[in-house]
Image: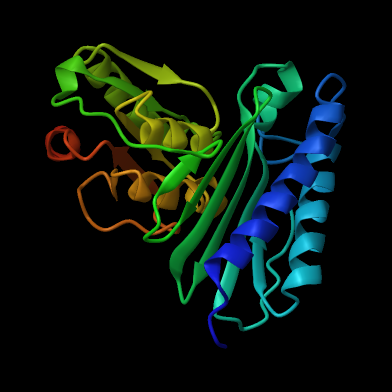
Length: 265
């Protein structure tokens, strides 16, 4: 398959995210719980399903041969060089409770490499976009990660998975460790937004265990194009199928990796 202009892909991804956000915002004051997934805290609503359907329809209409990996449905594998990785509503629990931090996330990969990323933050709408080798943007303005030089002067953010096993316990330990070493650690509940906030310099670093591919697929390109470094907690190369992630402004990356290695050892 010959490569398509990334600008054409971005245009469709943005249109799809905006259409999905219309449904999400309309339902924001009355979210319907469709079912419960793995635990009482891991929610999926009718709105998640409707948002995903809208996004997939945009993809199928414009790029019928592309493969799709989405949170709420089985993978559509067309043996394509292109893969769209979708989180139709990242931060569903926030959405259900009216907490103002949820998003649509769409990452597009060509031959397993990210080429386009779109995250639409809601309810105070902010559109984050990136094209590989072309920078990252928020509402039309180019964004750049922070210049914070060390952990002690940083603001960090993390997240906790739904399963309270060993990884959850490790992250609770790390939460305590970093809380004592920096200005503060936040936990807001939408990984895609957390990553974008590192890209804009609002926070200096983000880490989490036990993410799914759609949680980071769009955000990591937005972060990298804004000057961030993305890796696993031990500093090894990251891909969306790894079970842990570290995103920083780049300057404090080695220092954070050292802290993780010291803890894990």
